[in-house]
Length: 511
Image: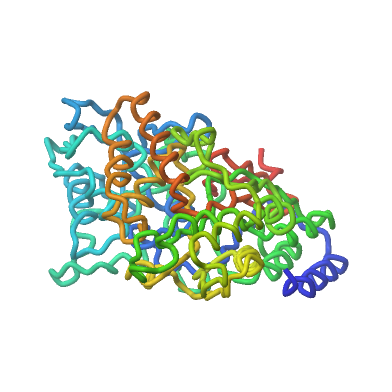
């Protein structure tokens, strides 16, 4: 927090010298992203920035309605279950790629085969390959999905974890090339990419061939420029100067202070994202390491004051987290979770009972939310541990290699209101990020999505949450806030699921 104090003063000083904003009727819409868009192809990056971009330039088969939170047809027209594991989807006949060519069943088959192809290295191979056995074209507009088991999340997966590419999009001189669509030229959404400068900006223009009855047809901006601005104080200054109109995930201290100037709107919106520390209960990094002892894991949970973290650091709409999921999701029953209230004395007693009265060396590896991470390390130091923060560019490499004793993670569940969007990825052992070593739990969590019986799913989720919290596999920390800064001439309402939909932004003076 200290590093932002001077920057806040600069931002507020700039506000005093800024002219009133001009008429907005003809200007392009500019959004600020804090992190680089390394590719415009959403199959190869799962950052929230790519989620937002993907909704603009891609149409999946289904779309999550922001009002009902239900998956509704988008490129699809309808579907029919032949049986519990066979799903036939009929495509609309008016969906086109940005070169004007129609989307066909062959394109869909090609896309899903590419997604699950190990050589293609897409980010969703494991997710889709877990349930998809095969896909085939029945005719020009009908696609059959043969599933390995009844899969409760199928329509959400078709909405968020897949993209439809024109057949052979990844072939370069006849060779499959994963980064062939790094600058996506053949999307199918309401906007198309006209310029992509990595690390600087992505420029979009409205696709004139987009159908008028799509749920995304509400888009009113003719042009959207996404600027990469890594410093939030700079984002805020640009926003008040009129160079940016929309920014998200702005730290609360900056957002609150800028909002007070009256030069921009501060809106604290909902978020599906949760933050947690995963502990090496399986002993992947050290077979006899301290994290393999339940009492140590319980001690780490009791050592932290979640309320203080939320009230003093995160603020906004943030709240303490006690579950391995977001409680607003289906299946995430907070009442069955074991709560580890802040009790440093109990934490010290548990460490002593486990044979660590003199503490041990603890390294927390993280790549985001540095102030929260420093607070966690501080709490663990207070109970006698030699705790340190290893703040790295990317946790994924050492995490997936099994090298970490404790690492910070977060999940926005792709804004899907179902615990099945987070728990299998965090507790099923076929995922490299899982450090529980608990096969029974893995099987139980996997089974939560393997039935269409919602009562049975809820029962299995409750059992899994009890086990996860009893065993203290995680240190759940907080439910995120999502802070937006908007120019005063912009109208934007953040949907309850936390997924920003930029095509819903419009100028206040639009008729």
